[in-house]
Image (cartoon, rainbow, N blue to C red; front, side):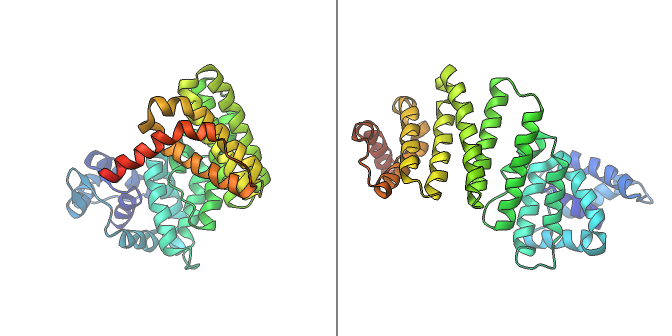
Length: 309
């Protein structure tokens, strides 16, 4: 029962159908035989954790995370790693989110609880050649701590490698590769690995230039985003003139779509504009007033609308 409760919790909760499948699969995996069958085990867990149409994770979160360490920590860490691996194959994004919270609560300060970070490492390693699994995990890893930033960087490195090795060729594949490179560049920059960050960012920009040349309505926003990332990396490296030019180019690429559909692209245009102003001030450059004159009315209109709501 404790093992299944931990499994439900690391998955962030399960539907009734998922719970019954997990009760059978986990019972068989750990060699457990319930006297009345695994269905009774599922029913008991359903009664204990039922919420709506599913079985919820043990709450509150910190109690559920502590349960993972009690059931699967210490001498049973290997059993826990294998169980987490099975859960991650089916529910990677949910499992990663739970492990990130567990790591933040128990092992980023308390060194005697390394298991959540070890489990995250295992999931990343398990997904080295599985872009879909890595992609689902990627968004769950924040950058609040060095330990998690390093793991997110490793994850994106594996993701880029997996995408390259899968013989990418179509627009969707190229777009995913470019976005992964863009995110890798941002993560590397956060870790101070600026030369590597710039290389990844420049490759992302190169791919989006090619895609945007063929289908501007589809890929200009992605190119603008990648140019913004490159500008931020250059800024962090002390190259204010270079960063200003990247932000300006990003604004130019985004401008046609922003002017035609301002609500859809206002957030990105606002971020690029602010970064451009700051970079110009740092580099003591005169900003492109013609460009700013075109985008400012829609930016200020959006701020006025937000203030009036």
